Image (cartoon, rainbow, N blue to C red; front, top):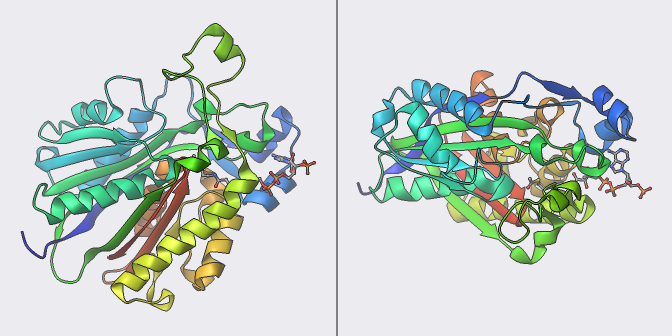
Length: 328
Ligand code: ACO
């Protein structure tokens, strides 16, 4: 399997039908459509109904990706579900998805790297395919973040949404596929975005639940600066490693955290705003699902063509960040 590149063969996406608009939020907390739009670019986000859970959307997105890749679920050797909002503590959501898909020959597991989870997953899948340990890999980003949002905290509840995106990777020939990857983390910034309750450290008790310890807490302003710098740095690194320039990139999909973060990263990298994809207005921040949802939308809209250089970059809680450069 020498000199094999891993490329994306099919993509898919799914999200709940339920939608929470800025007008809805105006009725719930002290906020306004004007504030949310100007500070984040978000107009609406999808929100799962009671009875819906993460793997439901992951399976729908995965089925679409598998169909488009024209493979049989039994050909999948590796199934990674990037999520920080799993169906349950045990087993992994990856194993639940595996069963639903009938991908019984895959090694399935969850990967927790918050908003960078999908790029961490792509990086692992790329390595496994390049070294011949897997032929086909399914990488999913799936989150129901609205379950961990405190709808009395206006600084977080306007940001997050639910959804799932998926990609099937397999060997590709020639100069196509993933050309370079970078993944990083720095646990010293943990408290910029975290949920202290619900794990083994602070178990879910009536007291901790009442105190909202399981809700996300975020120092958005501090994260903002680290996010811009980190995403731009790794994006530059994958370009430098492969000898390409920002001008060569035909499509740039950053993690959809905030329109101002997207604009600042694009500005820092000096990429033409025309090649930067944004869907934050419709989805909000869906963490690990944001990049695969965006990628699938770009495929559907014909925004990516054979041979195009595609740059992905992410930043999330942990903190984690990464970049992937590929030739479509
Ligand atoms: N409506 C109205 N006012 C608000 C709202 C709201 N929804 N939220 C905050 N404010 C107020 C604040 O209280 C503050 O008021 P004050 O000046 O009177 O104290 C003022 O607006 C400014 O608050 P900031 O937090 O400084 O606002 P900022 O411009 O930084 O925007 C935001 C906040 C949108 C959260 C931004 O910082 C951001 O997007 N940060 C990055 C988030 C991110 O990337 N997270 C990591 C990835 S997510 C993951 O890993 C799951």
